[in-house]
Length: 384
Image 1 (tube, rainbow, N blue to C red):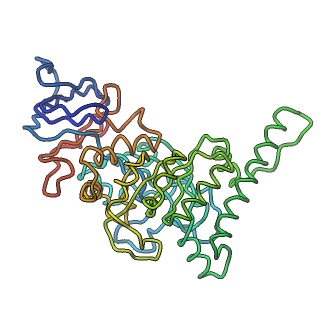
Image 2: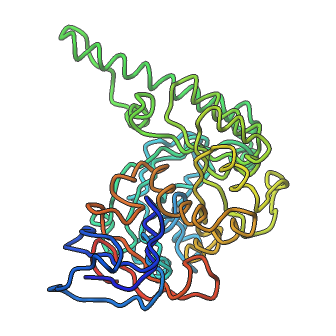
Image 3: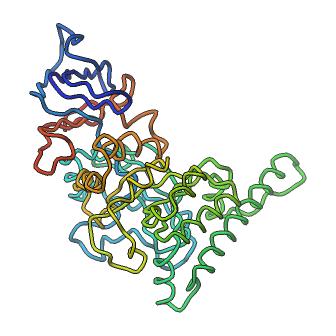
């Protein structure tokens, strides 16, 4: 496909006021001003008619497909509330790609999501990066696992306090995470010793510790659910103790400690900000959070936390950051290239760069404008 006469938001360079994007197969082939547009094109041509062309939107943190739309308990597969440490759980074993919210995501231009278990457990399980197009989750995977989810603060406390079990405090939540990370370190050391010495028996297989091995080896990032500033600090403290590759998810009180996050070079996936302050942790929620963090030098993405906010409102969540003072291109970056970078997918997605996957959205107005409409969506070069 050749997309012509559009305002091109490349996200890795300046906006091209009147340009084109050429797609060959599943990849972006060329991007430039209309003066450089190929004179002859063998495939389909789509005239953007002065509309906007940008990379497909990326939701860097949600639970799409984990909690079925309108189906109640039968399809609530995002929280295994029977064990506070469940790193062996895999999002791909719970995602239902036929959930109608996937089609709503595609229609809104959301082409990639990081989805996985909720925050009931201190060690929650493995997230996956998925395209939103498909009927078979195995064919939708961009990366699995994409991260290990950890959770601090109110949610694990509430779940296990109600069950009269550990953890009922923030201390116990952190202790459970530390204990299992340390076990994983020792498990890995025993495996390495057995591999080097044929007279040494390897440890018995442990699914939990196997899942945590890439975490403690720095190969798999941890995405840490934390709203309050003190929980954010605890997450960073644990990450530094075990030399983990860390991302803070939500970071609602990040605006109270922006220079500390910037100093530690910790990215934050902010949001959702479209909702009420439904629990004590959200008392300091503000639309200015992405602005304050980004001004301090923190790499910021914006998420819906679907179904907390329906997935199709990801652009609206970015628009709310503009209302909070962020400029439009920075807010758009927070659901494209910055989201891709924080997810470790910026080599594949997030910008209209030749060689990257052709996930593209064409809108009639600016992509973050509430009254605008999506005119075309491509995922992997295929028009959806």
